[in-house]
Length: 201
Image (cartoon, one colour):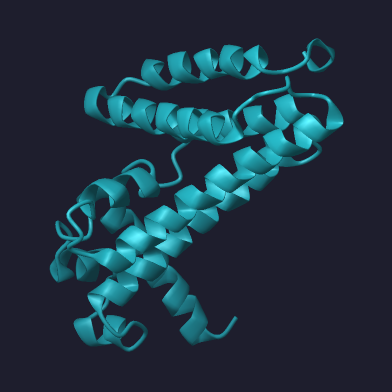
């Protein structure tokens, strides 16, 4: 990695934390300069604009989530374990945060809900789509293997699971109380087991 690449990576690491806590609109250029210890020109030497930096910082944040998710998925073969890896990811985030402000998808979705930044909104939608696709694909494959009960609506399961963990993340942030995530992920274990064939339990 070249010196320039190292600097660029360091900017992304710091900017991701700033945006995670303050949001895109709440984060000022002064906040970014203070966090990165660079001049405005130093940042713009690597990123064309604040929006460009925010988009890449979001991608960086999602790389962190993806890397941890892959760790939890490693060696998981059956439907139950693969779905529980998803809930374990979110439970781990409240115990060992990768970023100080919580889930970047939730934060970005809330902030961009009025379409003031469609590019960021699209990033959040794509990340959520990736999660949905993982859950749907896992359940579809599980049905083919005989792990999942006939008639299980994979799309509905995906909606419930994502809504549950993101809602729990919101409550955790609002009350600074991890128990909301613990209760939700414990409930999701029972929810997942409700549509699995007995042989996978």
